[in-house]
Length: 585
Ligand SMILES: Cc1cc2nc3c(=O)[nH]c(=O)nc-3n(C[C@H](O)[C@H](O)[C@H](O)COP(=O)(O)OP(=O)(O)OC[C@H]3O[C@@H](n4cnc5c(N)ncnc54)[C@H](O)[C@@H]3O)c2cc1C
Image (cartoon, rainbow, N blue to C red; front, side):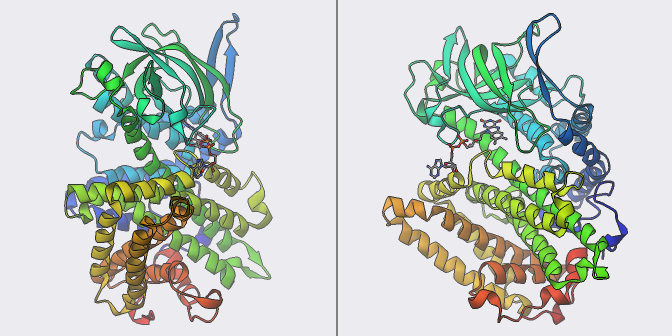
């Protein structure tokens, strides 16, 4: 069991991996091979220390001293340079050096997605703004690797993967325009052919990491049809080879509510030289500009970003829990620690239960191959789980930050305590990379277009099968199995509903699918923990989640006997073992 949280003053300065045995548990589950697990331990543990002890303190400084746009240099030339506080620069330099983007180059081997996810989750606990900047750098590098013409590919990749902060490049993505972020089919930025290259003209309205070096940009080749099928994806450096601006002007930085460190700007492209992201096997010219698949190439980056944003939500959620647990252990009212009061205990336990639920589906996105029968099933599970994880983790994080803030009482509302920033930052993540509605519609698209729910249903069935045979899980298992049957039945019924009604229900449907998947995967984790260590802690977590989210509980559950919060508070929040024999089935 971890030490009593009362021994700490605050989360900053601690080793955040050592304090999070559930993260080690997930690595054990998803990385069963000893050698890979050892590699994961080394690189994830490194981040527990780096983030908790060094980056987190600087992130507070960055939040108070955000970037500024210096429009002109002292000669009066329009340079449009972004000036950062040294704390932001130092954090990114440490992340670059430790291979946040270029870990494969750093480690000289392939890196499991679960390891990258674990490091991103830790980073998000201190500053999702820094993850935004470097996460988009990874995404841009992937697009360059897969789709850049040979003439620029190696140079760009070397820079984007570099471990040297002095030469490393960063990336960004420009989709949204003034007239629409959800409906990118309304984009008006034009692409004009110029020899084998292109020139882009237009305005982009939300451009995060706006002073990065290379951007992945949606634009419409001249003469291409309207709508999304007429769009193409381009690779655009911010500077030309001689260092002069590449037809690129930052109009202003946006005055944001949160995620202050990363500059988000409005940009005008005035003939920016661009390369078509056209696929290695295609001629990087006209055909790829008008093949109707330009949007698909951009969606590769959007999907990996959506997964990253789910991890941002989880990071904020975890930080909120940790800070609240420490504060509640130290604060006294009426002569005793407030974490002795049942209502505070319920808040802390449910913060943790929802966190472990969110982690279950998000890590499944990273490790889908482990639980799937073949590559195609893994692809489809990821296809539907990524939007579900993003909508679930970001919405719940907002609630988690708000609940944690309230544990701090009036102090929580003040900038000199750590939670107010988490709440401000959390509000961003439900919006960027697609709002909750757009994600719910995307889930529906994955069901109607690709039958992705069938693959997810199979995965859930296997999880439930793994959890069968444990008396302590039996009650929860029945509830989840029934929900699985009925929810998938409802999908079939809604397929025949009028379009407006089906759309009206799409968000509720996505929420139900997320709940069912989370519950099933928690039960599978619980069974594994029972079999491996005869430990019932995860069973208590899964049972609590199912009772709150899926079980029929008239009168708000007031008459259901559920003493888990009261009887197992310490091992739940301090990750101790629970004897399964004492848990009710
Ligand atoms: C801090 C920040 C940074 C950002 N950085 C970037 C960036 O780097 N690059 C980039 O390209 N974009 C970026 N964005 C833009 C972001 O992706 C968009 O704001 C987002 O996709 C929503 O688009 P919108 O703002 O145009 O809202 P709208 O599309 O106008 O949506 C407004 C509301 O209408 C709802 N809505 C829209 N269509 C439907 C529908 N069909 N059914 C149901 N509801 C609907 C939405 O859910 C939303 O609630 C950033 C945004 C923020 C806040």
